[in-house]
Amino acid sequence: MSAGVLGVDFSGAAAAGDALWVTEATRTADGLVVDACYRGTERWGRDRESTHAGLVERIRTDEIGTVGLDFPFSLPEAVLDAQCDGTWRGFLEWVGGSDGPTDPGAFSTACRETAERVAGKRDVRRETDARRGALCPYTNRVRSMTYHGARDVLGRLADDSETTVTPMQGDGTDAETVVCEVYPAATFGWLGCYREGYKATDGARPRREMNLETVAACSVDVADHRETYLRNHDALDSLAAALSAGRVADGARPAAVGPREEGRIYV
Image (cartoon, rainbow, N blue to C red; front, side, top):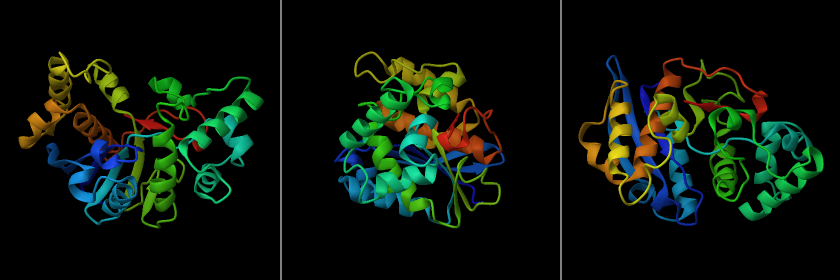
């Protein structure tokens, strides 16, 4: 496995490149060293298709060994069972197939109708969401990321023999590249700093400073990117994603919570 680590604050918006941020780092004997921090637009263009395609190609390069992506990788078990034959593969085939939902709105509606029918309520969280304080994967706030992340990114990586999406495809011990789900708010919470309130436009800089200093204290050298992280909360989230991915590369694994097909948030 390469020493390269990629942390991604993901976006499923039409102009995804403007909101998608990436931190690239290298694992060393002394910890993580940040090599680059950039907006998707700077490398791959603004539109969603080119940004997501560029991200997939970057993940597939030999320099990257571990990737942390900030979007839900799967659905609650009840919805998977009723809609996707109970499997993560079925989920990818559903959102990527010609008979599946054609956009995030249709995806969310189908999930909600299914959940209400089989679970008695429309918005159901995965066990890992409940553990990490994350939202239901198909709510209005998250649905675009879940839909496009699964269709445009995971769907292209799932059959790559050198890539393992963990835990659904195993723990990635023998993989060239391990791809894991991360959630920056949960990472910041695990570190004991602000998981909320650091994204505001006014008055939030001291909170971002605390979050950044706490990450740096985990043997992370942010090099000359400090001001980028303090100016932009999406960039800071990509740093948290890289930190969590680096921990996975070092062997850290959260306790197994819920079915494997639901996925797992790594901090």
